[in-house]
Image (cartoon, rainbow, N blue to C red; front, side, top):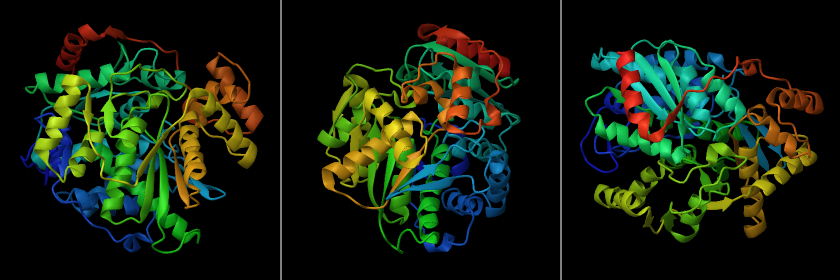
Length: 472
């Protein structure tokens, strides 16, 4: 069973999945975190491992139901094992970008629609559900792709106009399906995300759900690759059994790294989580001084998927940090809404955080390629720089997995800039990376012309209501 971070009302797995956000505005957490001996997964491929882990959380579904949906969902990935690990000295890049939209969001967003389909069937729910989701770039394309062709579910994606990369925008705005709409909002990601939460709270009469990592079924599939990477290091004899490792995660909305927290709580031997931020360093400040304060300048950076000041999934960590006290968690979130800040003495000393500016991001892309002949995107560069900071500050030689969240082809102009090459045309930039670095161009990069549908934030409420009526 699940309940809100702000209340005690219990709901089943299918209800939590379809609701997305709890009725009191909180996020769903499981009543009791399951334990898992990773030795039980040693002989499993990624898909089998995923089915076993999801079954631990979503017990109302049979293992066979989950396994069938998992196997079908990951057929769209370009490598059989879904993810890959690339060794570079004492660190390992966990490649999570082999899905249909070239970003880590695919790992969960090809699974979420199928879990929602199972949930509707389990509950006998026949009414059309509209997914309303905000994106800082990658979630949008991955969600649209995942929900394509899923009967009884429609989707509206909101993204900040001018706040995503050309590839991310092309993936969203070129998408064509009767059950989907994409809206560019005049504002930043936090404006989009706040609008979605407010819309949920003000329109409880509508059949709404979310594809953001605030949805528990978006979050849980991400737990899998933490277990997989640890087990793969064991299989390759890179680590000893029970040896603790670090994970460095480029972090914006805190969903990706929180999935790692769940993995650790379930029994995975983790030494530290390194929360890597860009110039929007609200999380770095939080972990370093215990104050979360969104009252600060918002920066558009060269790692745009992390341009966030309100990290929604941090609420789940607060819940566990208060010893699962829903009253204290609610008070912290009310302070954030009212004052834009709260104080919290983080009890999890295994979270560290470092931030990286845009200049350093470019330097790291160049450095990693020069040293390892390995090309990374700007978000992964933010993570790798945090890894460097950890070594320099603590002399920490613990084996470390650097979570690589996107293909370089999602940000080709930024990657080229790291090598002092300026190319404003996106298609030419893609071709230049292919020729200079001998890196195969993914087939999914062919998009028709982008046609934006731009909406003012003040008009978004009425606009979304009209779209939902059309879907019904």
